[in-house]
Image (cartoon, rainbow, N blue to C red):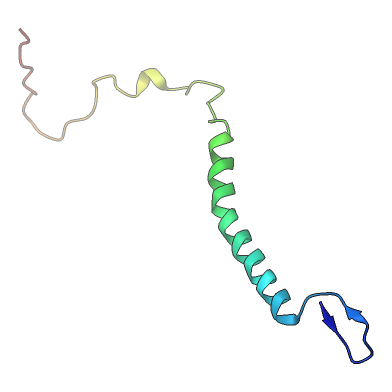
Length: 78
């Protein structure tokens, strides 16, 4: 609190104090953005497919084309 020439009490902040307060608020805001983003991504549910793929049984039938002339060798299992 300062007194002016007439002897009355002046209340308030100086420009430097307001600029420092604004800078601190901006820094806190920009630090809070990544914290909020990581928190909100953890709370989102993982999407699950509603239907099964249509051609699920056709993807591995063992009938793939082979570009060689020789027959594939199937090893015995023990």
